[in-house]
Amino acid sequence: MRLFALVLPFILIWQLSAQTIPYQYGWPRSASGDWGLYSNSPTIADFDGDGILNISVTKSFATPELFVWKANGAYQIGFPQAVPAGQLQNSGSIEITAAGDVDGDGKMELVFGDENGMLFIYKSNGQQLAGSPFFLGTQHESTTPALIDMDEDGKLDIVITSYYRDSPFDQAKLHVLRYNGSQFEYISGFPLDITYGGDSAPAAGDINNDGHNEIVYISGGRIADSTIAALNVVDRNGRPLDGWPMKITYSTPGAAPSLYDLDNNGDLEIIIKLNMTLGGINGIYAFDYTGKIFPNFPIPVYSGHYFASVAIGDMTGDSIPELAYGTVTAVDSGLAWAWKLDGTLLPGFPQRIFATWVDGSVAIGDVSGDGKGDVIVPTSKGAIYAFTDSAQLVPGFPLIAENVHVVTGFETSPTLADIDGDGDTEIFAGSLNRRVYGYDTPGIFNAEKSWLTYKGNAQRTGGQIRGYRPPVSAEEPGNIVQDYELKQNYPNPFNPSTVISFSLPKNVSADLRIYNILGQEVAVLLNNAEMTAGVHQISFDAGSFPGGVYIYRLKAGTFSASGKMTLLK
Image (cartoon, rainbow, N blue to C red; front, side, top):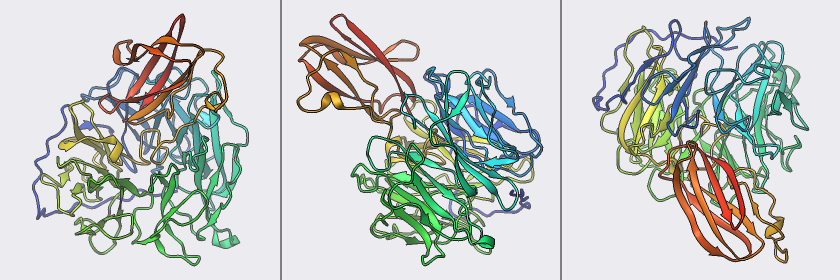
């Protein structure tokens, strides 16, 4: 259990810059009548499939609520929703939503757990999905879920950990749930017993590039009975991968793992801030899927916010990722850090932020307009900083929360998006002053090179998404195509490009087009082109399209088929 700490009023002297970044049209918005937004990160995606992004936050204190707005700040129909409260509603649990299509209807659901053992799944119209809430365990607190297709049925499954909310935080489990059309059920091999739990949220993706998704999670430690916390990787059946688990320390880390292909070889590395007191150092570690430490890691660094994760994105414009992180200093200024992959600091970093805490995970994205990623830093004293790759304060920053309810801290992980489709970057963040802010920066929005939000994306998978890869037996040499077939695109969800595969048993004219959820044609990939018999793969780049659900439709002779795919931005 975590206790909410009030921040006393203060006077800040902004020595370097004056705020000139305007609010996004329709923002800020009030999100509470009693308590502020604690440990939050706005979830931004096209929830209802209308081609327009929505914004969601939860408030976990006192009267729990789920808020959803349209891009212009108006409430989405059906929201806000009062979330059924349990016996305890004041510990400030991390009830950040994940967004994705868990029931296969082409629209996203919002998924989050509470501190009373309940997992909630809300549809885009404000109604709960049948089978919600799902019971995780008596007096169980849960982490931020990850939504990913673990059972390979084309629908997203829910990956979440839970634990008994009071010391010693035992009875912990790793849950993986799928929706069967009327209720939620465990997939084979789950739930897994973890002994002790903690606040580190699980991540999921195709770690070893074998075409199947794995789960990365922390199991807690306890010095009283010599239980050592560990970093774990398990496959879709709950079995540990070779080389795992990896022992860490007796205390339980709170940071969520980040997943990113650092060396561009198709595998996802696991990047996480750890204090390896068992023969290691306090710093940022990167592991490959076998548990081997990535070259030039660990990178020594001070402790950060308990829930903070490492952000990864291109800050220098060379298409090679950099790492960013914020640290906490009790008696001095907090610091924003940025490193190259070889472990060296970018020039000018670390940079002071003139506040006690970097109060959440940092984001990476262009907010200055030079096309390169900047580090966006939330702080405990109600200001959001942004620094360029040379550690210069971006003009117009810091962004200051209004002093309307005594406390103003941005205890948040900011979310970046192009909410209005104009090509520039907007910053969204919730404040302890009970408001959600939207700022319209001059930055050039590029989702592929950015770290947009807590755990990397709206599905909260932990970073780069590697989806389930459909079987490829029909593509193996020597196989003869016997029939027409349109396969599920891969990866799915995707950002910004994906591949659509189909099989033709004979030479034929083929037509392949993309439609939005309203049925409007948005792209033509094949226009009655003459195609030979065999297996074909067509790439679709959606870099200029808004996030949401799209339909791809193939016509070849008398054959016609379609599929759904989800673009995340």
